[in-house]
Image (tube, rainbow, N blue to C red):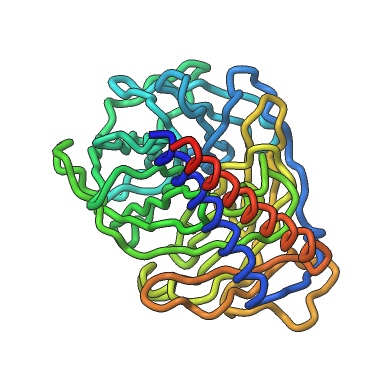
Length: 369
């Protein structure tokens, strides 16, 4: 058992290190840091200590919604979009918060403004089913609000259990998209229709794959934060899809289907440094991001024009950091390789160190065996 666990850990480390080195060798890129990003306000409510998702209201356009992940009750917070002050705490009756890792605000199949809550976290990758809860976006008549009983999606993966922290709702294509979280940088994209089938178990369909590489962007809990996807969103008009890691965001222009879009090159945005940045959403022409931790900052991030698949030759001083991806890796996957030239050497050094550490773990495990 010790040998098996050690070997598994070594494989993960080696995979991530090789991914980073190969990606940087394929597409070195130097770009200026974003100058248009700005801090909006802080998550001052002590009850909102593990904010994991974020969404902008439709029925309540001057409200931003956020929720805690595992450890909290089945509730979310309605925050004033100008100040961050908590306007209401919203309880979802009959729901359970095993690990609510993301939320989205989008119309449902009936075109009713809705809040979607993704109970999809699974750090140990053992859950047989995961859940999506949908409720009508409520009227905020008081400080304590109870929604209608939720519509429930009981979902299972077609292969095995996965850990995921990202959901996007595409009401124009009648689809929900889930993106897995992986230390190796290889994320799977799954989809299901917006009809819940009365809570009966449904099997997700694998749509594609995203391959990430180290970027050198500061922030996050550790180096692997640059490889792990923690949030996603679809623009209200269905024209743009975004995922974020702890440090960066990647945007695709969606002209036909998301499956087709994932085979094209995204635009990378280096996000403002956050300790545990997890949430991302579209807010008009911009993006909003949040992070776990009481007092953490919600940022407004300039959203570049992603109509073109490559970065401008001469980005102006106010442009956000963008990075072209390497060539698509075939099928529905795309390899993302980016980083600042100043950080290239230390990433190589860290990658080589990880290779050496993986070898030591393997040798140690063999000796114990």
